Length: 257
Image: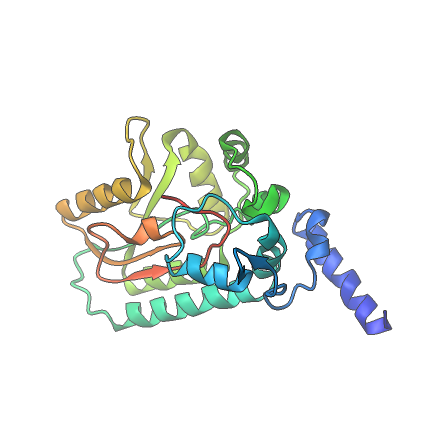
């Protein structure tokens, strides 16, 4: 290993530790690019598998194929995930800036929370990057710590929308028992104000798609106009009352029906 390569290696490890990311992820280096695209799953590359997931052509999957863990690690911790997210937000901001608002305070933009507003990547790095079975107890414990970092691109969109006079509604599948932690986490990460924070009640059953459709319908029945809607899951942006335009952020780590 040359001197420059060694310095870069030590720098990457330092950054990794400072961000609280488990050293276990280190073998998935290099951090640049999506990496390991030649890994195979079901006779297709992991890159093609992710494309199928993001385009909603592969549905009903319950975890990242074990052979694609390395690929997903490279993607999420490298530059490509940020680049893909940046492109989505660039388009969202361009769209928002083109709107002619009524100006009565009823124009809102709906944000999902997990992997849209706040990132649970530190949790997933320590728990298999989506390859293992979902553990509700462990994930709830993580949420209650209120330590999820903001997605930088989403925070940029949030601030731009407020400056344009568009109010923000957070619509999440998180339960009511997680409200206080969610409020604390959002405010700590720079999301200081919002029109509504909607969490799922204990009696609200059914799929995420139906639940979120119903909540958006209620918003519109109360006079709000959903000018935009952004989420990482297709269940965030499909269904009814989706808004004037939807935006899908990348997330190959898990699927919400």
